[in-house]
Figure 1: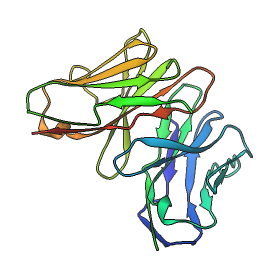
Figure 2 (figure 1 turned 60 degrees about the vertical axis):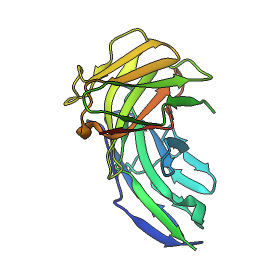
Figure 3 (figure 1 turned 30 degrees about the vertical axis):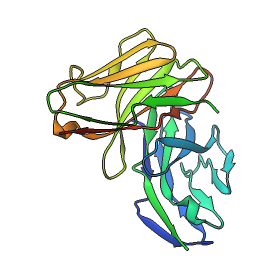
Figure 4 (figure 1 turned 180 degrees about the vertical axis):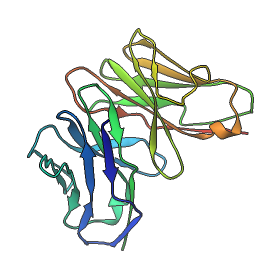
Length: 111
Length: 115
């Protein structure tokens, strides 16, 4: 079945450091891919998405490219800020209307 | 963007009582709603998927009689935790999507504490 494997956390970075959170997926069809962010005590917010191969999703300085050949959707940001501290979830949505989430990666950015 | 409102945000109940959590899509008609339970190590566990007007589809291992899900309209789904026990204490999150849109929109979550 479909699944998402996400880099284990927690991740701690200094402000302005480069961020990569790895995400790979397994799917039988052509899923849409997402990154969601969760701030403490809140629900999930869509950060970015990509619906087909080679699409690049971007938002708030974060980027991720849908790589079909490597079945990956790694999240990157060139310069993180303290306000980026949160938990990040990689997810996929398949043709069967289901959502599959990774286990989440906690990011802490220190000044 | 689309807004999903979940209520209450926090609830404390006594063991043996039932608690209802509401999930509303405020500015769109949600053809599908999902209910998740989030454990302390952050992972989201899908509990059930519901489509308006039909019975919810529960994931394996989720007790249908304990976690009652009703999707009575295109803007409202409810999760009722019946005869709650301390082990049901958790963070419950709903999400909704509508036809033609690939992403799901999430509620703010409900922190349930059973004492």
